[in-house]
Amino acid sequence: MPLQIEDFTNEVRGIVYSLKERQRQDPESYLVSDIRMDNPDDPDLPLQFVDLVQEGGGILGIALVGYTYVLEEMGIRFASLAGTSAGSINTILLAALGKPHERKSDKILRILANKDFSDFMDGGWDVRQLVGALASPSRIRKWFGGMLAAASNLNEVLFQDGLNPGNAFYQWMEGVLSGASMDTTEKLLTNMNDFPEAIRPQFQDAELAQLAIIAADITTETKVQFPRMSELYFAQPTTVHPAQFVRASMSIPLFFSPVRLDLTGLPRTSTGYSDRWSAADLGAGYYGPIPEEVLLVDGGIMSNFPIDVFHDWGGIPKRPTFGVRLGLERNDFNRIDSMLDIINACFEGARNIRDAETIQSSADFKEIIGFVDVGQHNWLNFSIDDDAKLDLFRRGAQAASDFLQRFDWKKYKQIRRQQLLTTGQDSTRALFAESNVLWRVGLHHDKKILSKLERCRKVGYQPAILWIDNEPANDFIELQSLQSLGIGHYTATTSQEASRVLDRHRIDLIVTDSNREGNPQAGLAYCQQLLQTRPAIPVILRSMTLADQRKHIQATYPNIVAQTGEIKELLRQVVLHLPEPQAVDS
Image 1 (tube, rainbow, N blue to C red):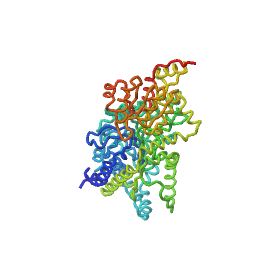
Image 2: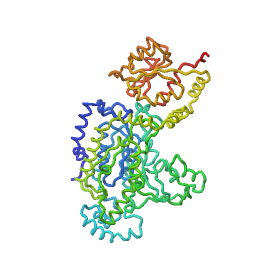
Image 3: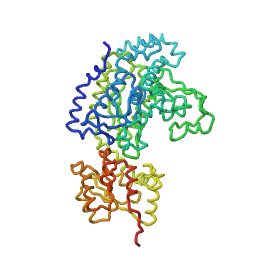
Image 4: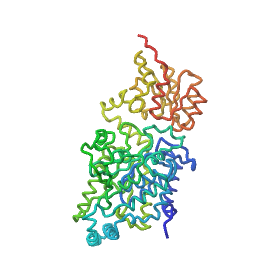
């Protein structure tokens, strides 16, 4: 009997139920992002937005669907998405099969439930025999069956560039995406950024959703990130069918034919085009002559797990980048008894070392990565049976549950803050130089901001603000950024302490959080008090949870600026609401 969606969901019903019970008992521990909105289907389970990177792994990619199914069941939605090889398949489906705030897992399961993955082996019956032998747990069958099957595939080995043309996969993927009306890159990126109006203010322009499908250009030795680098390979990048990116990313060398792209229609000899190949913003780093044709293969040979693709090395994110890996992290050694084992070990080591070094380079990566124990499943088993599909799905779901129970969003942000503090004094000074701060947050062209800061400097005026937060150490970046702009500050952790500071010092502006002293409305209550006692001092109220109330608050309390915590807008509002600078008496 064909598999149904319910066969998958029933397999993990207990995992999801147990996780939701834990969330209801301790909802604070399951907050994983500062970008969130009300969930129309479950008021106790807010929708939270994260970025997601998925590792490649052949047929093991079924486990990725189980992983993201549980994340969606827990109200987690995906903004930027990245993946390599099998990871690129689930990535593109999550990007295409609904709006960012919608669940896509049921649609993905409907597509995959009864898909015969052996259809992707479109090189003929002899190829299927060879792959079946190589995927066998029996060493005898692997060797003798493999030798016999290899002999029947001599034509492909000697005269073709892959055992399987890959046409069946491309046609399948093209049909799925076109059926969802996502037949161009432009349509796909527009869909990925179609956020509800209620949550759009929480995103900076630079933080809108991005797509990163990783492939390997073996002609110019370039790690390719689609669609960001599409202009190097396509004359009309916005019209490229996204299925082409995935087909390139999953082209396992020798197993699938590489994707061949003809570049003769591009301005290969023009200086402008060739300069783009070496431009720092694209990252190709290629300085040679542009070939007439390039070959693209599985991105996993260069980066099978691009966990750093969305990483902001100079700041603290409002949403984390979750990563999911297929297999436990280097928990066993390779057993090498044959030439085939040597070849496999060399390939695995070469393709994994770059990503392993990236993860080791920064402590925060270990906090955001989940690992799926794939057991004895073989990544080449494209003839996988129904029981194995369900088992991989369950393993992915269990891994997601384990990850959510250990992930600590507050701890992660603390790690990121500590990293900024320990980058060295020279690096910190450079990071918080005024010009760098304005550039980093996107205010370097804001004429109002630049003009007001210049007027303060000319008259020797240093504004002073009062910063109220129950954990001011968490606001190191914001306070250092303000200091770099010539704006001094006093800090207070309670409303009572703030009142004492106001009695003793000249304060030009107050920035207060909303939730403190165990009361989520403490900040707003203090603002109301200030309207009576100190009506001349402007107040900025910071809270992610007040995003939907901003218009109401500012209409009711005109002296209060409700702000959701995004640093660019915070700095802008602070500077704009400071009093006009006055000359300092000598």
